[in-house]
Image (cartoon, rainbow, N blue to C red; front, side, top):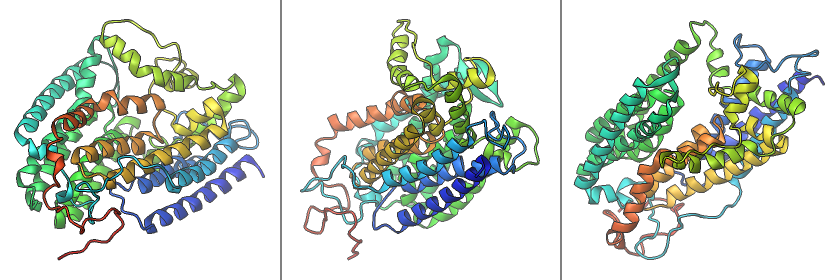
Length: 470
């Protein structure tokens, strides 16, 4: 079979496996407040499989930075077969990681901190923000103001823009970039503080108004560094915590929100790639990572594997950033993923806006086995986070876990490990700070059950127990 035939066959097999995975996840007897399993599988199918079909079958005329169909026969010299195998085996590994038994984090304990029968109902949570609404609302306003200053400074100090997306800033403005990155979390905490005014019962209209206003503010705050997946990334945690509070208005808001967001994606993509009548270019160019996996295999054949160089660069990235903030110059001795792809595809390590994705980075460092292990670990960690979210009785815990889960969904497959580390540490420092503050000052409040929960035998240890209404 030719490389083209293998690619079509394996992409079709991956589609079947992905569909089975979605059915399996949907029908499992599990309370999952984030649905990370389903979101990860869907994102994998869009980023690797749909874009793979668009590229291999020629649906899209504008097919990204790398042509995976080069050679005679088509694909013979471009790593096409390896990319197809990485897609199929990666899907199988992701499914396995999402479903096998795993260790628990944030395990519920006996006593008043037992998991309630309805663990996803907002009234079942302890909310540090609602217990300290004035102080937390004030701190959120300060964070929003500081983030707004950072946003204005960054947008005024741009050194490289592509369609309105700020890719890099001068070194002296890096601290303002972090402030701008913290703006969404100030908005999120402020929305939670406002929602806690009328927490029990939570009026649907009031919560819907502040949720819509918060989402609009998040959209403005995230457009400078991307504007599409970045908006989804910062909106995901707020939606996870607020959608259960708006009751009957939930589905109308979801339908309208999805429609608006899809329109925004189309408009933003069209502005960046120019006017086009090719609808598949929106998938293959912007979301596609299949051809980048072929590029990685081709790069390994001619230049050799990197043997973990980009992973080491990712591990050193945050410590070196902290040294820079302290005024200590320190250079990373290893190349990042975007430096490798920028040099190889565009001719310069400063061309850092080509992000190949997880499949390509794992293949580039460790070959096909690396892609399999990478997706298995991604699935395992995501399942642990999602289950911990469902078991948690703390709103702060859930906010942090939802943000970590959002990072895994929107950065784990299509991003790079270096950005993943930054997103989980420096970019969400306000949320880590809130989590620590609750651990220190919320101990007295957590000794008793939150509103709506009674410490009685009616409280169950398992989140799988169906709700019982008296």
